[in-house]
Each structure stands twice: as C-alpha cells, then as structure tokens.
Length: 433
Image (tube, rainbow, N blue to C red; front, side, top):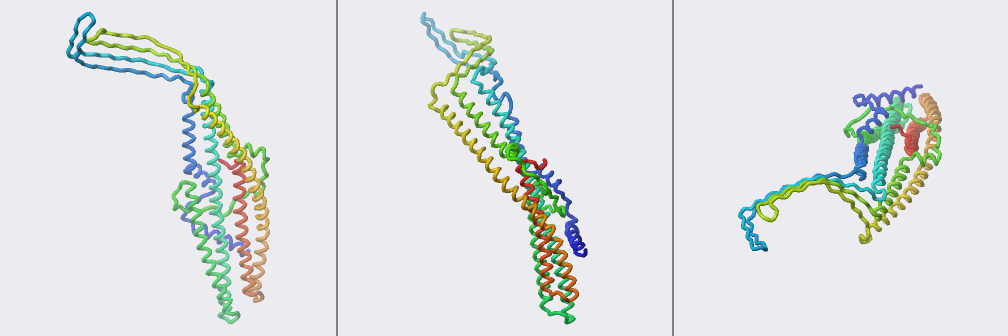
C-alpha cells in the first residue's frame, strides 16, 4: 500500500509542478486543433475556392451579355475634287460620331460540353470537401498521438521519480548502516550513484515533455512556449473489431479521394472529346450609331435597330492539338485508375499491419497490467527483507529496478496501444470530428 501511495503522491507532485500551467484535456486539444490548425485552414481555403467556382455561369450554361459604346470627335482641313469638276475646300471641318449597343451570345449546342463542365465543377467541389475531411481526420490523429506522447512522457517522469524516491530511501538506509558499521561503504556509494542517475533521467524526461508540448502547440496553432497540465493517464479502447475489407474500401477517405480523381479524369476525357465536334451559337443585339461631318458625301448619318445571327464552328484541322489533348486526357484517366488500384492495395496493407499491431498492443498492455502486481509484491518483500538485514543491497536494487522497469513498460504499453488504436480509427475514418 505504501508504494501505491508513493506512486500516487509522485503523480500529484508532477501535476503540482505544473500548477501554474493551463489545464488541457484531450478533447480540448482536439477542439483547438480543428479550429486553429494551419493545415486545416489552408485546405479550407482551397475548399472555398472550389465552391466559389462551382456555378452554372462558370460552366458556360448562361449567356454572356455585353454593352459597348464609343465617341469620336475630330477636326481636319479637307480638299476634295469631284468627277463633275467641283472642288471642295473646308478648313477645320469637324466630325462627330458616337455609337452604343448591347449584345448577347449563347452556345446552343456544343455536344453537352457545358453540362460536363458543370459536373466537373461539382465533382471538384465535392473532392475539396472530402480532402478537408481527410485533413481534419489526420489532424485529429496527430493531436491524439502528440497529446498521448505528452502524457507518456509525464508518466515516465513519474516512474523515474518513483525510482528516485526508492533510491533515496535506500541511500539513506545504507548511509545509516555504514555509519553504524552494519554494512560496507560500497553499498552507500552504489545507492548514491543510483540516486544521481535517476536525477539525470528525470531531467532528460523533462526535456522530452517540453518537446511534446512544442509539437502540441504547433498542431493547435498556439504559442510555441505554452506548457500544459495534461491528464495523468490515457483512455484506452481494447475492444475494437476489424472492419470488413469491402466496408473499409467505402469508408476510407484516401480511397474516396482516389475514386473522385478518377471520376474527374473521365470527365476531362469526355470534355476533350467534345472539342472535336461542331458547336452552334447564337448572338443577338441592339445597336445605335450617329455621325455628322462638315465635309464629305454624308453630312449626317444615324442608324439603330436589332441584330442577330447564328455561328457554326466546325473544327477541321488545328495541327493535331485537339487529338493530342484527347489522348493526354485518356492517359490521365488510365493513370488515375492505376492510382486508385494502388491506393486500395496500400490501404489494405496498412490496415492489416496496423490492426495486427493493435492486437499485439492490447495483449502487451494486459500482460503488463498483470506483471506490475508481481513486480510490486516482489519489491515489498525485498524491502522488508532488506530492513531486516536478510536481503543484500544488490537484491534490493534489482527489485527496485525491476519494479520501475515494469512501471515504464506498463506506461509504454498503454501509449503504444493508444497510438495503434488511433491509427486504426483513422484508416476507418472513425475519428470524431
């Protein structure tokens, strides 16, 4: 019971040392990362761009309407000789002309190109949203793993402080025994060496914890110099069940993105094919023009009225560029199809590896949970034997080291389990958002 109390006390001491630091739970860290993470913000802007471009006008389904106007004023000296022998000389002859009009153009037929472009814009918008979700999933995963690392470093420091307290207790006891002539000085010196070594370990772990806080601050978009008071243990899920391969292929966001890229490539190929077909357009307008001149045949001219017409464009020969574009689009579709097959295979490989690692991590965690009780009981017995003068310093030191190592293995097993649990859920796209 005394050692259980000692561990609890040391964990409290570690937390008290960070009493001036802000309390940060894992849900808080995830929430801040989703709100302030730079990678998410960048992808969110790209998603907004894709949404902004996703309009029927940008697809070419609406007519284009333009207004135009002009004004011209000139002054010139003119000399004109007519066929009937007349002469005309005008100095400073002024000419004034102005015009205005409005026109509209619309493509009536282009082999469905505008509707395909509309589908392409929609698919691009949807792809951007999926990419945003994927980045959010990745950020959650990174935040959980980084936060877990901070907790693990803190737990290791607590275990080291436990070893420090045990070494100090043994050092004081051997010092008393040495001074009273009950033991050799070498026992006291060994205890002192162990005590100093544990202090060095504690300093190294403080540096690791500081680095973990730096990584966590970067993910949360926070001040890099912030420190936190994190949880003293990790919440673990030891009852995950493997996802069916067919369901995994439908739920994994990386595979979904590859599918959408293939869809976009096929749309691009279809759009390129329409460039080889005729297109028909219509234009209508209304124009007004006015001109007057002090010299020339027409002293005054004015016209106004509607106009309209049809434009037929038949691609005949463009140096093979249209055929080249179509061939390149087909090759891109083939490439995206290969990338999709590769992504499916790679995700299956990752899932198999990570799932097996998760199962082994669960087994290792349960084993260390059981082992810590044996290590604690062994330490209690050796401590009692050492006080009674039955056990040697070496035996007591070995029991202390075994207990601390078992404690570290338990914390490491919990951390390893949390990491693999997070990776499994990330591949299944089941991390909470």
